Length: 387
Image (tube, rainbow, N blue to C red; front, side, top):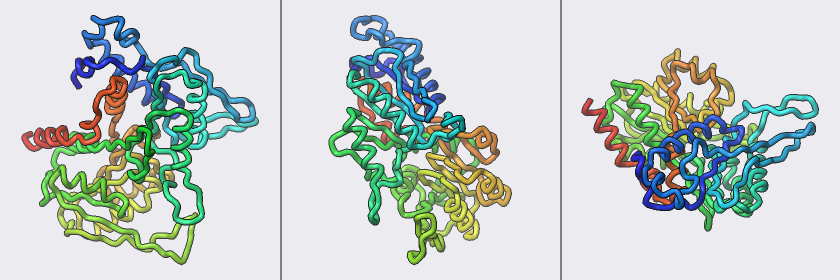
């Protein structure tokens, strides 16, 4: 990114970033990028009145969310937010954060993280000029529609944030992209370019053509993501659909009987499975098994969120058996030290990507090329093929 870009527009307000406990590491890395970019913008130095407070060593606010012995909490701001363009970042899935309840250790749940986001907004007390919540994993994003008499938690959450004064909500790869807020800002960001870049950086013998590579959707819900990859790479699509037993309910869901495949032959081809998240991994590993039965070559997985709720051992076994070759997930959410050490794992860093969004939005600049990075993808693919 050009360090001079966006200085032709005045920021909507002094930049302020709150990195809550779930995204402390991500927030600090994002802050470092923005501080470095802005320190090099000569126009900002030549116009100290217009850009007062524009160049700083850090834009992170001093924010604390202490808890009482009962587990109840509050938020205290250590500095003013009056007139700021405020960005609140938190990973609601970060289970590694602990707090004490009546002397017992408790891991923070998504509910706890979301409550902390609301506490920051409440502590700001309407003094910020604009508030943007960056929630990499959309809280309750899987409970986005009603199929029976049940709660619609995602819609309630979005309405709650808007009613509290939030102007924009940014998330990565929403489970269902149709989730939206009619009259407020909402962006579901797809890290497509970051996945393709890291795939090409870590695998030096993959061939990006229809004869050697296919992109696979593990279910009907991921088809939109998969079609985009297929179009920009010029390769074919395959899809699995889940055949369920609707006469039985297990853990609140109808169990999957089988994964049925639709599409061209995968025999002898590398395949790239695309999905928004790996939760337990059962479906993903079954799809990989089905692809290997159909004589696919190497199986790659690209998933924005690596939750791995049932541990990593089953993926170790799948790797040893040759079912999977590499798995890519982003650092937008918590990654355990054990995951980062795995031979089959590729970490996709999205901190610079996130920093670019914040920098542009603070200048009220266009983000259209970030939402659809087709030119960057074509350039990266051309460089790889030429090499």
